[in-house]
Length: 81
Image (cartoon, rainbow, N blue to C red; front, side):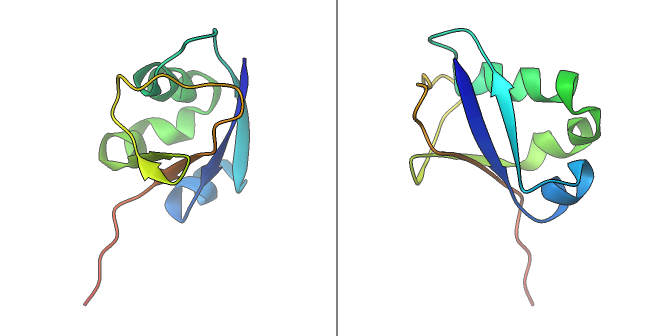
């Protein structure tokens, strides 16, 4: 399956794109997506440890299963002051 992942802030800057397309096996999990991303986009590797993942506008866990039409977003930590 092919999924599109939206990237925000430092994540989009790291790959110079607002979204990336990744091919994963059917039934892949959020954890598998996170493991696969640095293989295709090495600049994301140091940033992924602190991101949250949203699937269809809800926060997801690493064992959640993805489907072809899911809306996936990687959300970096937010700081304020």
